[in-house]
Image (cartoon, rainbow, N blue to C red; front, side, top):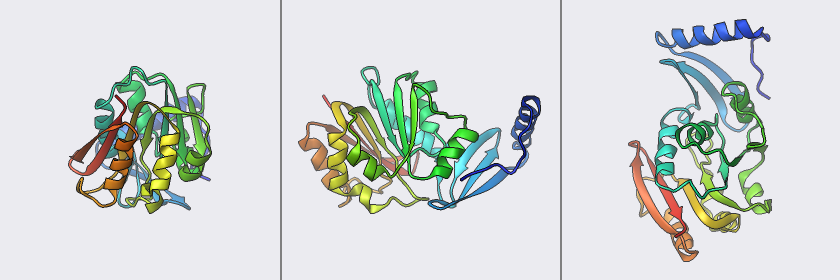
Length: 233
């Protein structure tokens, strides 16, 4: 489990160190490495006054990933969405985007297999369980097969470093996604594939269309990722 190397500080000192790190990060990056069983070395980095969560080869939160998923959210109508399932938590930047940029105050369930990631989301980025947020430490595949809740919005953003495990592109996983969807809303999939003609992506697109979704593929979002956005009429 993730634990900070620093001893607990009174609030006034904690605030002082927070602002000092933020100011110093304009001069040089301030990094803290955190070991994880699932993600290898995670890195919490202050840079230019902002805090990020990265792995060796990828941004997990509050960098390019946040911009990619914000673009996806801009493509859908959030007004009728009554709840959201986030598969892949990271530091929780999607939660901040929903709350701050879209004023989405409905319930969010966030699932991540890594307890260290959840601890970082809590300690470094101040995301805590509340009536409007439930963070669940579980395997996303097991969760989606077992849940009985139906979600209006499902965001699939599942990576280990820069690699997406193949189980999350299997049709059995996506059939379970459909069973867990209310059929009134949207699904956003951070596919990170280079072309919309990928043999991996096409069966997922066909399955979604066969179940009444309109599907749009956005390539090189923020210059990198492929994003699948599926919506019901």
